[in-house]
Length: 172
Length: 172
Image 1 (cartoon, chains in turn red, blue):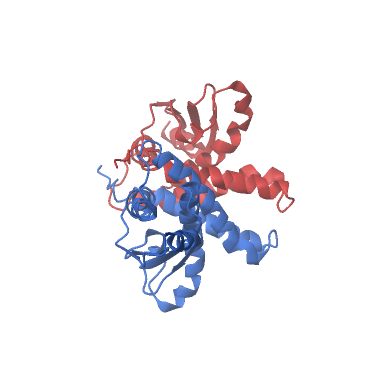
Image 2 (tube, rainbow over the protein chains, first blue to last red):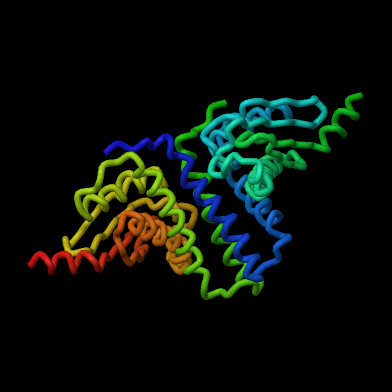
């Protein structure tokens, strides 16, 4: 009996993530919790997981040179740890804005590709936004993180680091 | 920058699992949900994750010979997929009772080893009981699954399959 274990490596995390969304939205339906808070709840859970993970991952790494160095770590090591693949494309304006593109975002791969499913995308992205924000926060980088899906299952994560604007203006 | 990625392979799942426990217990404290239901909720989440995972894992496998063959798959492939290690010891009375021992159960590794933490063990085991029950259920095996910790971080999972008793008596 051979099992494609590598292929299924991210599966436990992915299934649990789906189950968490299901649970939170169902609790809200049952009136146990407030519906509007669902995205915030998922984002908060992601934040705490991101904090824990980055702490474990950077335990033995050298200090980062700068913010871009940190982003590269997020794109490569951090993303691989969670999603078993790297970010496909990293763009920055070198003034604190970063766009991370994942052409095959794992947490969307169970949603069908039709446009009618795009409306469900936000709940599949909230946890990951928190995840990135939590990781960055633990590395001393304050950020605002949002994500968008244009064509499934590609996902763009936008990171804005207000503090780095200030740093740039200090340099001027 | 080198990262011990293999070591951290199970980390995202583990951190998310901890966060789910934290979330469910905190909701109960805030009076949003009923406290007594927490273990059941975790068990149910595990059940659904187990169902999904086993479906993915057995997609391309041959049919199982018998119940013991299924248990071996749970101990080896299924456990490795979720916990990145195999069950260390499988015992059975060949009448529908199985005991799976994991000497270093990953979902307990973040709890300290003191005896005073043993009281918290049940909430760290409920999800996994559901996980195993869900996996078995999808393979047509009805079961009752419980787990216990004697010495941290070792964990014994007890599986009772009532149907197989019947099968044995049919053979008699």
